Amino acid sequence: MILYALAAAMASPFLAPAHAIAQAEPQSAYTHAQAEKDLRTTIATFGEAIIRKDARGFLALFAEGPVTWRRVNSDARLARLGEQATKAAFDPANTPRDFIERIVSSPHRHEEIFSNISIAHDEDVAAITFDFTYLLNGRAINQGKESWHLVRTAQGWRIVSVIYSNNDPAG
Image (cartoon, rainbow, N blue to C red; front, side, top):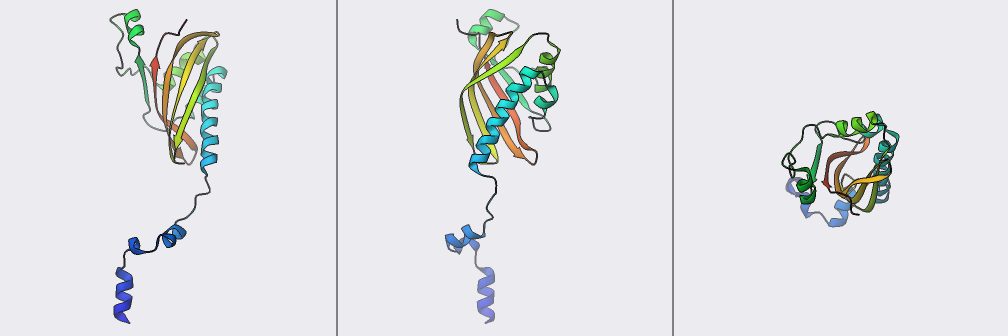
């Protein structure tokens, strides 16, 4: 009897039948469909905060601590801007806070249009990519690709990085 108890105590959980392990794992109440819906809401909230000039709502979309916010200038834009411009250098003045504060203090109407949205996630981390056009008073001033990384926190989805191409609008 003692040998049987000792053998059972030493048995690896990896030797248990797969169905026994699957039953032992708690099922999350948070579903793939709910995550998809919440991530699309995050995108919409981001765009609406720009239009409404809602700094508080905009900043609430970001995780605590440092957030990567990186612009990559196109070669065409670099040629137009001249020597002072860089391809993808770190700019400490280019942060989510600085971005929304420039919008809030501007007398102009700002808007970002999202298209070709692609979302990949596992209910805890997500990557979102899309095409964007940035409008100032209804006129396109920038367009390109944008990519976000997000984490699901106790407060919901939060953006931890934003990278985007900085291109002159076509036409």
